[in-house]
Length: 228
Image 1 (cartoon, one colour):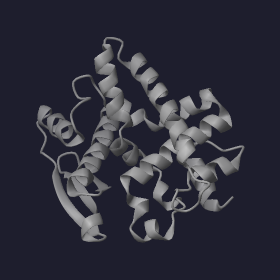
Image 2 (cartoon, one colour; image 1 turned 135 degrees about the vertical axis):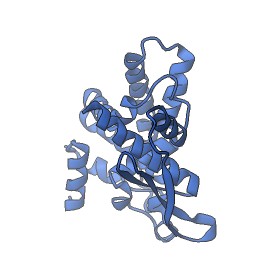
Image 3 (cartoon, rainbow, N blue to C red; image 1 turned 90 degrees about the horizontal axis):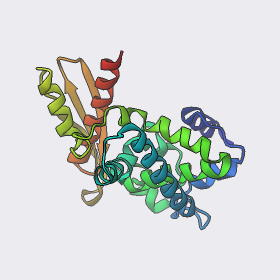
Image 4 (cartoon, rainbow, N blue to C red; image 1 turned 30 degrees about the horizontal axis):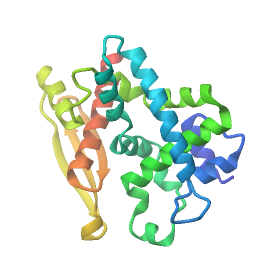
């Protein structure tokens, strides 16, 4: 197993007994017939159950509809892609030549699928208790900043309300770069909060999604600062 995989396992705080499961989880269908689609299917189911349990414990006052909407907010592709980028999953993916050329390692759907596949692989490799711990760790920041009132608002709206409620300056967003063909561009955006001395970056297939990711990261930093 390459040093890169060793680094990823350190980031995940999980070491695979069956290293081939991690290899498969990072293999996109464009690269091989032996790919991560089945693991992605399994991981999606495991993720939904564990996130449902985490929300059930965190929000004892929430009704079924609220819990369902909160879960959908946390497990949607955009949220998974944000989490995948925190582990730089795009650097580890096995992609076919076409996907590599078109920037597939930056695409939300591919990143989200890879993270779900890793969750499925950990479930097979270590069992339910270990994968539950992994998911809880991955989602720690998102869960800590989530409330029943905020759960259905996008990160930019939540960040603005957070800052306004504390009399702080509003965030400023700036496009750092764009890459790729016109029909498949990738944006890198910077979010700056002067009062809090916070600077975060986000990426996505359009400017809005990149800004949302940068805002989500800023919310996580602000939440950590408040908890100190």
